[in-house]
Length: 200
Image 1 (spheres, rainbow, N blue to C red):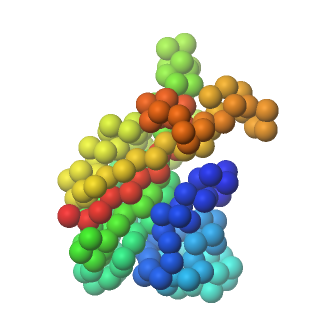
Image 2: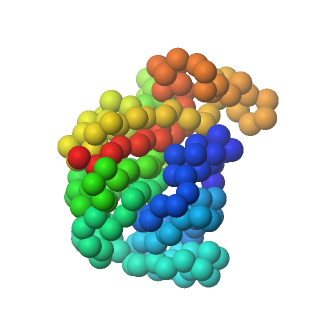
Image 3: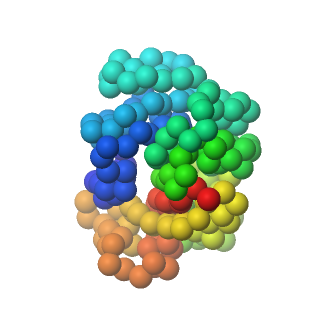
């Protein structure tokens, strides 16, 4: 699920001994790396993906469309909500973020990610008159600043980690985005923005 740095950062941020809801769990491609030592429930809009999720990981799941439905859980039910690569697909992300806030316990954490739509490569494509978004299911485009603004209504202590991708080239021969680089450099080249916020 993404490269090693991305996967490992999720594992580090999530930790162990938590009650977790994964919103947009799909078939468990991310869940498989962090579910051991945690109590995890998944939700998704794809029923077939949920069947695979339960079969692969022996975890419980619910069919929910977070764009139009409330989450079927009591308030304060979870320590962490994982919300990876979902916000860019939603018509009403603020509705989903509010519901996630409701089901998080006091001081619970939201951990997720979005594509870094305004990375340098995409900006060059735009200047050259080329489409920079190839996925028709992406309804929203986020930069570090717009992502933080989206989260600030319901969350505090927001931290954004630009991760994955290359400064030059790609694959095994490219120059990767080193974690010791200044934030603005990483934000300019990173493929993804992993975010962490604490419920207000």
